[in-house]
Image 1 (cartoon, helix red, strand yellow):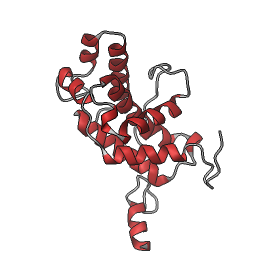
Image 2: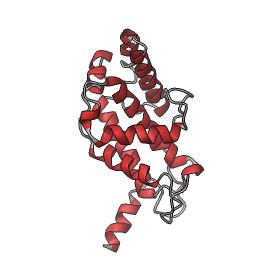
Image 3: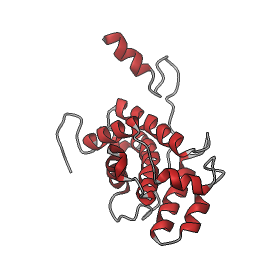
Length: 188
């Protein structure tokens, strides 16, 4: 069991061999109001993603929620990993968030190597355009070069997100750990 735990730890972006620098994941900034909430963007993003990825039926036929959840996943995977504010989040959870980000990106057809900021910006802009009754502008946000398919197809994917296990597991764990001090004590 100890060997398995060590092997799993070595898969983390922190280098196992001496002298190597840790790998810092690509991290987006969540523009104010992008998730249409006046609350803390980190907490809002975790809660949106956790809610959406727990049950794929929650976003079925609801591309606004799908886009906001996907943007939230991309954002928190970097933000909770790099921000000293969230140092209490377990290293395994942080790694799982990065895996969840990849799972969501694959489901949406995000072009490999696309910066997180581009993904977050396009998805939040599309969600807000849909909420404002401007589907043409939303579709224009969802095409190339960020996504590999035309905007109409990406919009369909957002309205039919499959169950994604690592997105669910990682956001559930992050939500549970968000307000703990590392010893299990909850604070607000």
